[in-house]
Image 1 (cartoon, rainbow, N blue to C red):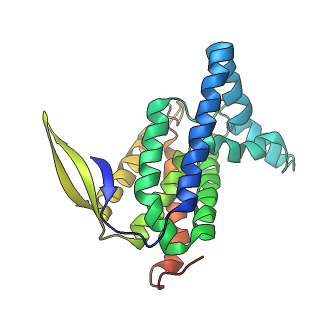
Image 2 (cartoon, rainbow, N blue to C red):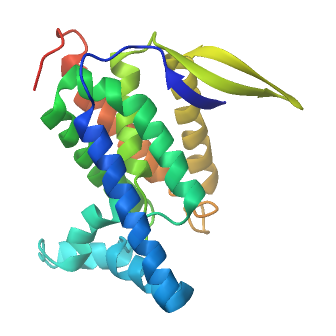
Length: 232
C-alpha cells in the first residue's frame, strides 16, 4: 500500500510541515552539490561527519560530552537523505500525515513531536546496535513519530492509497488504523528478524529507529486525544 493523501481537511496552512519539507529538500540540494564537486567519496564523508555514528554517540554520551559533534549530529542527521527515493518517500509521508497532526496539536508542539521523535529514534537504534560505525541519516525516525501521533489522533481517518493486487492496482480509502498499524507491524517483524549476531540495520534501513520514533510520537499525542483542537 502506498498512501497518496488523507481526506481530513485542515483549518490552516501547515507552516511547520512545509518548512521541514523545504529544509530536507534544500539539504538534499546541498548533497547534490557536494557529490558534483567531490564525487561519492565526498558525499560519504558528509554522511560520516553529519550523520549519527552510534559508536561515536555512545562514546560522547558516556564521556559527558553532551555538546560534542556526535551528539549534535542527532539533529543534522534528520535532514540528510541517501537518494531521491529516500527523500521523496519520506516527504510524501510527512506531507500526508504531518499537516493534520500539526493542525491538531499546534505548530510549536508539532515541531516538538518531530524533533523529540527523531531523538528517540536515534536512541532506539543506537541501543539496538551501540557498536555500529555505519552513519545513520534520514528523517524516517522523526516522520515515524508523526505517523504514531496521527494514528492516535485520527485512527478512523481514511487515507487514499494505491493498493497493489498482483499485477493490478486499485485506489482504496484505507482507515489509518489499518494502514499505519500494518506499517508498524512490518517494522516490528523486521526488527525482530534482524536481531542476532549480524547487524540490526536490515538492508540499510534502521528499523529500530522507526519503531522508537513511532512509539514516541504516539505517546506524545496521547494528551491531545480527547482534547479539543487548539491553536498554538
